[in-house]
Length: 281
Length: 244
Image (cartoon, rainbow over the protein chains, first blue to last red):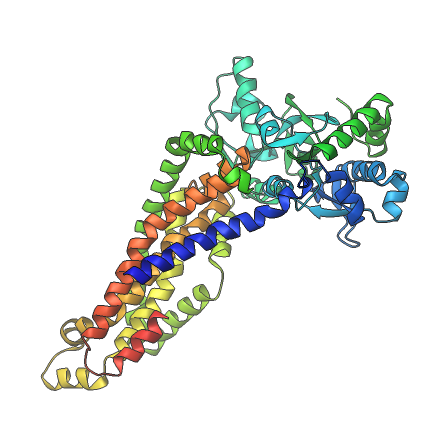
């Protein structure tokens, strides 16, 4: 029995150790003296690691043939990298100073927190709750929540959603926004919500009619519009997308925020949005 | 993340969501596992007996069932039941309750494994036993019921307990299709709040609470089976193979 207990203790110890091991790199942004070295770390490494979406048209889409990421958010990453390395965005792109990694709603948070990524530019909505855990830049885009339904479902307005199932993405704010909207407008509907890990799963569930509606941010929803489904004509839940970085990497967060603010002020963000044919609300 | 692990605020947040998230998820997982286990046992016994019968067609049917479900991933099967089955049934928007979906998923999948456990269990009883029974005038069913089955039971109980254990864990495949089970609620809260360490740590604890007694039971049955050999000493080897 004693040996068993001992081995259980050893096992428990190993578990804690492995947990701390995966969290270890998260502290690299702070040197022993307590000074933030997060920006210098990226310069020393020679490449900035950025998490982006791979499946959001116009914002960030991975070209399946070349593996290259194309979109507004990817260009934003080059702008920030340019700022860090002291070059222009085009030079940053040419020199390959940004290393992209595809993220989804589930992986982006932990990847930033454990230091695997320097920042995430992935249609990440800024919320007060999230601000407690991460650093966010000023909003670079304001999106609205959209609702996509099957064209043959007979659902024509938000009032028709009573008793229906609305599919939303894990870690998204779509459900809260929906409830807020119906409450503010006194609409008496009570749908139920089901969460899915990825957008393709949601699109699949809608096509198989296992859910009645697919509700995420409009930017994302655009990518799943086809002949057999349609948008409901409502606009609500305006939400701000920001560049997310780890809480303790204050130096990096400050640099990113300053850069985004500058780009907002001098109209570069608007120009970049127009370049990618994204409508400004 | 380590800092987050010992952050009291995050643990308090976890405690607050236990009643609305973890309890319903835990109950759903438990219900699905129990119903799934029942289905798996029924299917396992039917197909296990079929695979030891003298009828070639029955044996073939059983083989196809076992090989098909053992050699495709459970996750794929569950997604198939969820997304493809309704389309095959006419695409009229038929929706299976998540509980039935989960029961079918783990029940049919583990039924294939249990069928194999039962087949090897029956085959492990020496042929001389059924020959002796027949010479005493026992019919096939009587032989099975009075001579073979009691001996088989001792052999198959440990691997059966192992199957039950795996079945509980495998209910987590339901989370893929918004199954409202423990894994679903864990993912949901973890991703929306960002307190991953707390969310998954506590979920693991709940799964552990369900599985650990089954693991102990399997070990206990295993020891008991070895201590009480059935017809022949070579059984010990059989058991060890079945368990591993």
